Each structure stands twice: as C-alpha cells, then as structure tokens.
Length: 104
Image 1 (cartoon, rainbow, N blue to C red):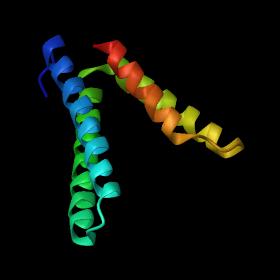
Image 2: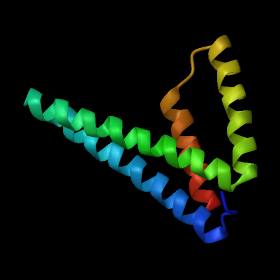
Image 3: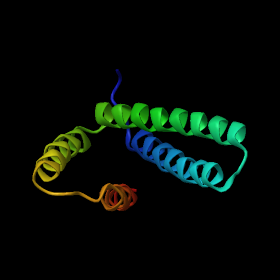
C-alpha cells in the first residue's frame, strides 16, 4: 500500500466518525419502533455500519503507525480492566470518540 498523506488520515477519521454517528442514529430508530420487520432491517444495517468502522480502523492503522500502537496498547489495557472489574463499555467508547475528535 502506498503511504497515506495527512489528508487521507483525516478522511479516514471522518468516515469513522460518520459511521459511528450512523450507528447511533439507526440504533435509535430500531429502539423506537414497534414494527419488528423494520427493527430487524435497521439492526442489519447497524451491523453493516459496524463492519465499516472496523474496516476503516484497519485502514487507519495501515496509514498511521502511532494510531496502530495506541490501538494495541488500549486493547491490552481494556482486557486487563475487564479481567479485574466490571467495565462500562459505553464510557470506554465515548472516551475513544473524544480522542478521535482530538486527532482531527
């Protein structure tokens, strides 16, 4: 893969933020409906959006070595915490979103 420039990294981070925003929006839709078929379709879309986040995180790691190191360190830290006490996943994700915003 060719080396990514700063613009590429910014676009990847923006795509990640957009996908996370879409996940939140679609999950609200799914939670607010009483129509099971609609909820099932929306939850399928949510899964697709989550896969896009994963794909873009992998792409960001390929473009940004420091981000890759951070992800590896946080992965280890997360599992150390989970192994010793209950962990609030929502708080963890919110913190990561804040950190992504700081990188922009």
